[in-house]
Image (tube, rainbow, N blue to C red; front, side, top):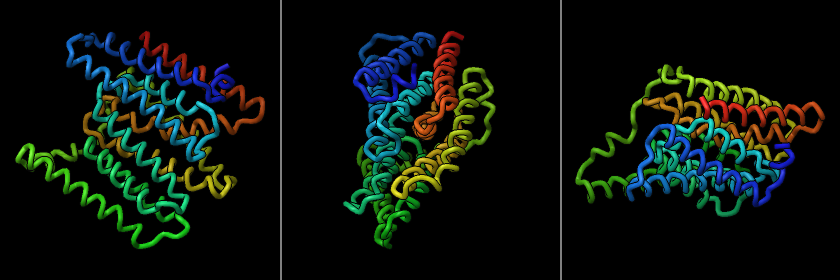
Length: 310
């Protein structure tokens, strides 16, 4: 049973999920007939696979380190299944890198519940969000999550609220200076934000319609269940739960704002949806809930296989 197997954090779980990421990547290349063996292409393929595996392991580290989920591998299983469900994410190393920076920023925001090294944590989160926006401009919207995380601290101060502004300006200045030294141009600034387009007609193809509807259904159902459970959560867990829910909401906005809706932008939804779904699965104690959880995981696996065949 999938729920029993992934309810524990064993090395075999990580090995199997890493293999699935690698196999999914090369299967997507074969289906797209884009397999090339020259050194440049191999380097790009290797970097993309490494970044995706790193993102999976990073997500697992973040949620376990900050007690976002219990000690299981449901979240990374779901993240991998979502990746296989939307293999278009493999085609955009820029989005993969941006998502990794967002995950690193998430780690620092979740750790703000403790009073230790607060200034450093806020600056680190600022730096990672800014770097993510360098990869994809609309990732800058995650600053909307950072400020509530700061305010939710037991002792927020004006200094803490000013750090993101100062940090953002400083890092951006370094970026502009680098571009001037290397390219001798301000063009990068004009291309920072790719423009917005809320037209969702790109999701009408079967390859994107089914995964998108499934992700939205999980977000609405599992996110709603998480919101309903907030009053009963222990006080120390509430800030993390609220942060992950806010990240999910902002991720939806980022997906909608993307001008070229080819599926790669859905990557930003994977981590928050995987997390809230994992929270729902691990909270099931009754027989009916355990059966539902098992059917849910198997349904996702079957959908992944059917879409891969089709």
